[in-house]
Length: 378
Image (cartoon, rainbow, N blue to C red; front, side, top):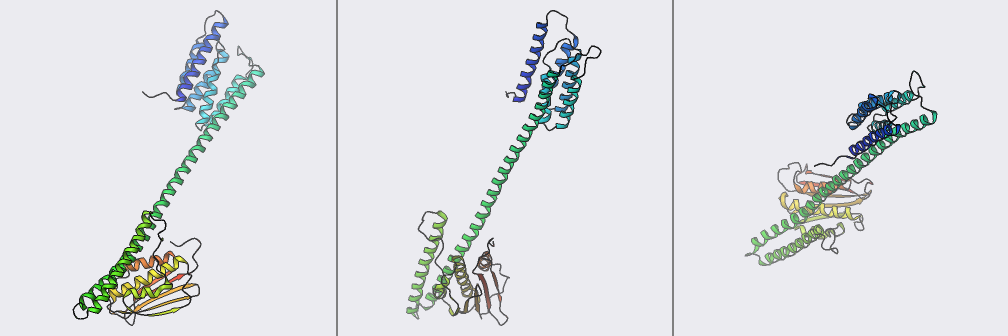
């Protein structure tokens, strides 16, 4: 069974007080016959008060008319006027301020009418007190409505802020998944590709040139060890179980010779400008682009030769990787390798171009600005 609302309880208490006060006034007045209006008008006003929340304006009008008729013509001066104050408050609290003000003004006008043909006069002090209560009831109703609106707006702002925070968390989680996918692709794709190339070389030279097979197997061992180390580092960051682990693999443009050696290709390297002390994000992104571009040469170009050019000039790191192999049909760069390189470049406010060369072969050209935009480019 549901409990009655606070509004219903207030209405019932007020009705009981008004009816009890009216009866007590009749008893104290002494013997005498009740006027029909002494009973009918309080009952009508009390009945209207019970529906004041559902029909605030209609209830206010019924109560005000009943009270306006009660005091001039009823025989008992009961406290029915209390019902007007509560009806005025309810109307203002529900947003019907204009009807509340108009009804209050008309009620005061009716109560202030002088004695004319049996209509009782309301003295000045009583009239001023009643007028004060009328104004207070309307004002208090307006204040409670404004406070309720303010609390609802504050609650909505809090919900919007929570929703924005959740959206931001989902966005960051999505960006982090993409970053992790790029890292895993770079680590696994490059190193496993090298293992595959060296394994094929070992199988080919196992019988005819055992010394070359031994070198290839040694490279496989080192590459697989490096793959496990970098994979363990990446997973350690995800699990957050090793605070001493580096937050990114140690690739660097300053150690580009190691990247070239790990590729297994015959790479002609051209370096221009200092490559040490670069911003960490630029250094890592450039090294990853070099590694992935050389991996693509090894996988898809059909040649084992490439040219690597890295230039530090005019506030940019420019990386070019070119080969002259026949290669495979270019699909526009929809693969994960080119997509990952492009994402790394654009995340730093740079650009990446890739495609077939007019004279044959394939090229990858990346530009990474050394000064990052203040608002971030993502």
